[in-house]
Length: 317
View 1 (spheres, rainbow, N blue to C red):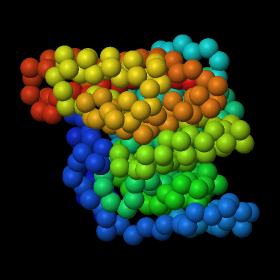
View 2 (cartoon, one colour; view 1 turned 60 degrees about the vertical axis):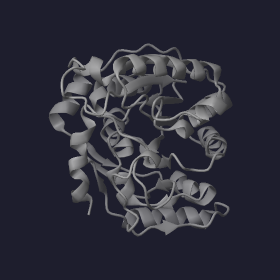
View 3 (cartoon, one colour; view 1 turned 30 degrees about the vertical axis):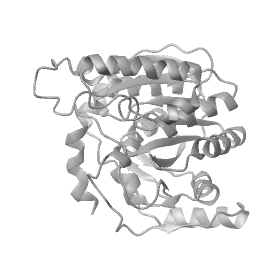
View 4 (cartoon, helix red, strand yellow; view 1 turned 90 degrees about the vertical axis):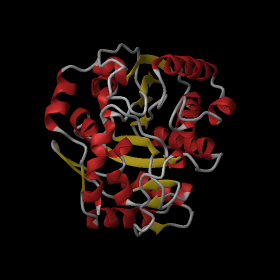
């Protein structure tokens, strides 16, 4: 079934992508899933998750294009950050591939003993449930990227996330970042979680609390895969980005929660990043800001922007 969706990659070049609540592009509600009842994590469950992982086929990086990826890592954006990066925000729109590579390069330099990279990503497609994860590992161009099944099991058991490998492989917000994880953190494992726009309002509180606890137990890098302003003309994009920047600096959770695609594709993920940063005693630092028009250097008057432009921020904590 996933092959039917591979053409989606062509839509991520210059146009934006909305969260599931704003789009009916794809409904994969027919995908079979396993939903675990929330319960206390035990050694038996951990062992079961490892067995399950070993029986799962590896997922593929359908959004990987060798020529493009090599250009990203050969010329990553250069960022400066004092200290160790524990969490950060990167785009998933691969037009911003150099920015993504720049963050990973900086994070890998700051935190060389990372056990696990955790990706908390915007969920773009309806179906299955509002929170999705997988026990599967990934087959990348740089070798197998193993799943940290203990963390994935905690997403299922403690957050009532559903297991859906198809959804994780389909959604570029997670799968598009996987080659960067394996390239820059070759010895780390990965755990991924998709968060839909319609997830429960208390998701940032619950998820940030869980992530903060995990970060005390393992050397983790938590990456929030978020794109910002969508579908607007350049002047309005700039206005909404300025508003978003001010709300991030103020950590205004209430106003961020009410934002739409004009500002950010996942207010829930953004608030989780801010709450996790606070729980870890970190202050978010803006490393970069751009948009698809500036990166492509194609004038907005061209026909390359039928749905407007997409903007990007890089943050690190």
